[in-house]
Length: 630
Image (cartoon, rainbow, N blue to C red; front, side):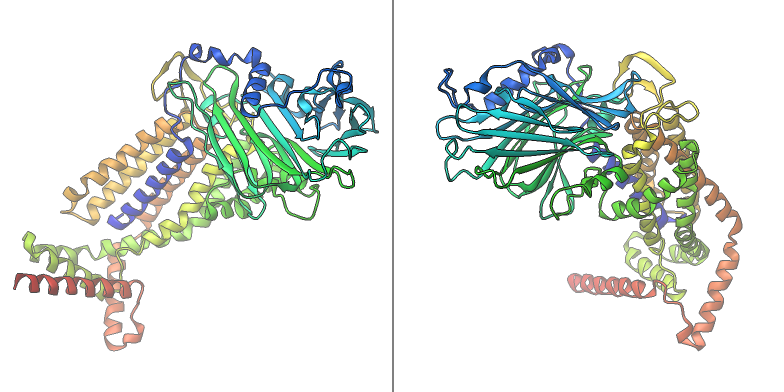
């Protein structure tokens, strides 16, 4: 390959490196020792959450006497009503009338037990309403559970002569959606006539569910969707550094459809039927490794409320897997006519890359998965199909470089004609004149390289989010969504960790071989330019080293894909090299040129217009330089 293709491949490598750097968000900072975080003792997390919430949102003092409007709800015995539809089991606690735990039936954790999204000491959900004489904060009150049919329960808040308020929970069949209707009955005298909003405070610690801490924490996010937008956004939470962690805070002024607390493969999403009003406050803190938690996420928001009880305030909770198809299906169960697009909680990449994932990678993956093949074979077949799809662009890029190599004898003549540095401008002009003469553009291979880029990057976003690969083994990898660590040791080595990923090594090895091939072709294509290209060459050789330190903790499935992709590229390059006759290409260029001399309409214009513009620009620069010398 000549310089243009070399630059194109280098551009792809740089983009991939930037993707890794941006997605990791400084994850390479050293995590503090566990002792530095004893103040966040997870065995006492319930009180820790409570204190954090009280500090952020001070409560109104209550009257502890029998005349208090909320006296009947101040004391009681906590009980849990379990709703179970076969997919998810959710316990509704009578204290606070909130989901106290959520367990998924079809997914296993690292110990082989059903995945638990949270327990009661890991979540705090508080609904707040301002009353005339006393404010309601549901987390401090006891509700009376009333049976309401299969997988439905009414949690009733009784008052002292001021009516009652119902929290009606319904777990929808064959879904991961839990509906909540909050409705006041006979409480007109409790609330002021101008009350119109209900405040919600939600704090939760997100458990570590997967094998690799750093990789999972990278994909553990607080995600939210604005009501007037299609795309969801993520709150950028800083990783745990060497100092006491500080929360990342943000206030979103737009109305929101939902707020999601997302692990790599599971999410708890709180949806407002009438949207959350502007001014939602979001916050998050990262935990250090070894505590069993990824991040603590917090949201303070509010939505509409009818104190007369004519219209209930409706919420929906999605508590389930980050499965693209399941999320789309559950989105159809949303209240109202607006599209909540729960599947947007999954980050499939930048706009172009996302469309490649949506319309090619995911449908192809779903099709192949139906054949009950090993997921490693599925990735192999997908890789081959993608390489076949981009093969025409790869051939076009290669043939463009082959044409420039075929013109090498003429370029060598120009270089020999102008050996002096002061003649560099004339040498460039004559070089471009040669390319223009034969209708060849030295930049002709860049566009095909750019066309291939979205396909190469799409897997970087798809594989870490493909829950179907979770806990699926292939060869020596026990989980394609985590790193393979058959080579491991007890101590932690900086930048490497405590293991060596074989698939990562294979990926880096193919990258090195690809680089060697490109360097050889670069030397053939542009002799005499090696000095100016030394830095680029060293950067290309440094890429595999950067990839190793970056991908050693990444999923084995992703490294496996890049290994296969690199291997296919090497084979393709060898085949193209052996099947291309540069003498025949030069003869064809000469024949085309001779034909165009008599009939200009037959002349190929593939890049000549660009070369003409560049040549004109060079002449203009030379003219300006002459004027300056005068």
